[in-house]
Image (cartoon, rainbow, N blue to C red; front, side, top):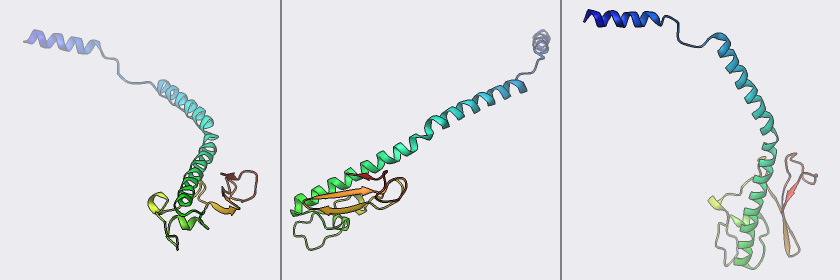
Amino acid sequence: MNKIKSLLLLKSESHDHRAGFTLVEILLVVAILGILAGVAVVSLKGRTKTASIQATRTSIQAIGTAIDTYEVDNGIYPQSLQNLLTKGNESNWNGPYMKDGRMPKDAWGTDFSYSLQGENYKLSSAGPDGQAGSADDITN
């Protein structure tokens, strides 16, 4: 038994160096992570505006589908977007036509603009700048 104990002690004494990372190794890893984070931020920076525009286009399509469904049910386009949510004097109203009974907002938190134009309608968002009638408006 003493022989085994002495062999274990000899073996443990031969590995006297400390396990772990040196300060230089840790700093190198932190620097590499910082470079990778910087690259990721730069590459994703322009994507948020693109994603917001695409989300707004998708909302316009969903509202457009609800408007078209309303028109099929009632024979006319709604006078306002509120007609998609609450029944007025329509005899064939089968709404609410929007999911959850709520009207979505655009990606910037602004209400959509709706107007009848003859036998068609215009549905639009003011876009990223929030100013209707500017170059960045998003319409159907």
